[in-house]
Image (cartoon, rainbow, N blue to C red; front, side, top):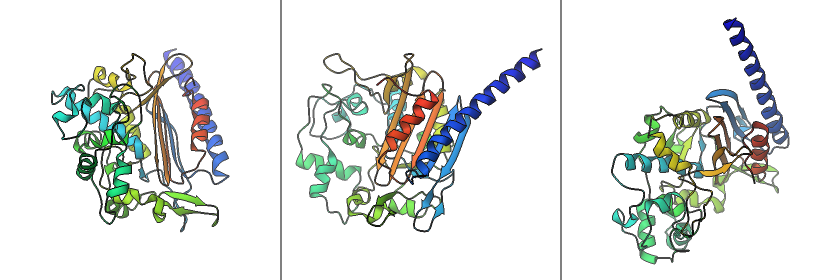
Length: 351
């Protein structure tokens, strides 16, 4: 009898997984047929891969097909890794979330804590505007250069620290991290912090593309002047610059259900909305957007957007469903595609 019960449950689950896979393929195909998606999609249920498929091209000009194992620029999805390193250091007693940033770095801004940096409530100005105005773009800037220019020109803060939520790349430049803390420990062998030279020497790196109507073709994003900042800011770390595969991101996702990196009690702070000075809550924790589904269960996610790339990871903390989408043709309706997938897979939040 026990064997029959197990077999029956297995058949039911197999049917559910098959239905999910069909639904995902139908949605993605509707975009692929209009040349609106090139990339890799992975959906897992409690760690089991239900769907994983590559679409489109790694390099459009020569029509080199994408593979599931290809590496993509993650853009702002990188922030959750930076936040994790800070949580690791906090658990080891090396720092406190409420330490002043000025204890560790020489910056012209007072009253800003590490917590403010992590949950985008620091009020820091955008470093890119200052660097764009003053930096010699024949050189490649890194974190130390950005800190130097912020100290030199001291653009004013946008608001009192902790009073508002404002997405800030500057905050995450202040929290650089090392590869050993996460990537090697989790066996994420294809994940790294890659500069331009490293990307060029990586054979399975999916190149970012932008559609040019006049040419009716997808052109490499790095050939556009508007994308040059990704080159002359190519040595910055923290807000972006990590590149990875869908399979490696699933390893990361699964590690977040365990205590391989930090205690679950510590990790909970990453999935807790920031409390502002007036007592209201934002929708952002430590490197994660936080919302709830129709049943009140938390859904955490983050997107990334660099020239030629769009990325998304969505996780249900209750059902343990995970959606990972890596795109290298920067479609404008990427958000609409993600929304359809979220609704179909039970990952949609209450708007």
